[in-house]
Image (cartoon, rainbow, N blue to C red; front, side, top):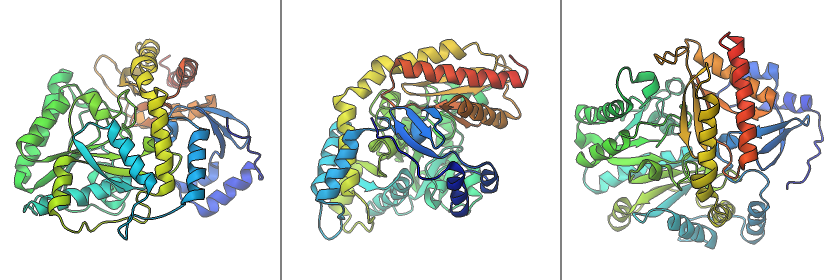
Length: 460
């Protein structure tokens, strides 16, 4: 249990200071300043409390981060011990330290054996920045410097830096700072919105074939990698049809294009497998990781390299002209070790795969499968999405679906549950330690929010 925090200031004071000094993520700051943000002060398990004492069930693990939930004393103790012993050192100057070495030993014991090396970062955005440079360096070493085009997907999300934004497919983000050269995109495998009369299987194959068409358009000799999330996270928790990833892998192998999986959200147990690409059954050349690596208790990310790439970089590459001040930070590494030990030794990932994940998915389909506002339920393990639809038979979406989903999300906060809205979809990703009682509360409060939204537009 976490200690009770007694705030020293009232909520309005915090809000005024916040407005004076902060610009928040993906919000109209002027509008937020009028409303005032919620001031979160304490967390325990899946529960959060704000400065006014209101309790919330966190159905989003923060931002897909807190896989072990809040208030883990083992993670706090690991940080404290490392702070006392070696609070900081770098991986420059021909040095390393035990925490980062032991983290890698544990990390690679959990990964398939075709991975061998990691480059640590502070976030998923940084991991994908490093990915861009590393992939291009790999092809340079092999005498193919022209292979530098990175192909992503429209509506994909890979971070908020300039490079990771270019790799992602969020057009609103491209408008802020412009696009970089040598990035291209294909459509997302969003059957519900774009499948038309095709079956999911046929649509999945056709969506994947867009990659082949794009590679041929650009010239395979110019394309370095295809980068995508196994399931789309910030873009709406969109799960591709089962036919999608096998075809994508075939295309990448055929045209000698690296296949890079962004596991920042999907990694460390979210789907019931340690990594989401294992759930979908394909073998990426690289993995971008973050979030669940430390359960969000301290910032850390990384780029995991397959042996094919690592061997070229190490044996043929000479000086690797990259480094970060906080790469492999001792305290972050110590927390990551404690986090991975808990996920493994407490059987958390196994329980999500075999027990609690199937229970969550079954309950969601029982409660929302016939709901007049919900056209489809998607998900696996502890990640799920409710697709709003105006006409379920034709899969017609609401013209104002973003507003409806945002309203449902706002009602959720009123009811004491934190769920997220994205493009007409309500998404959830609770901490992996949730038991049946907490799953029941999540579904019950989400049902209330969806019902209230449906009543407001007259469909319930």
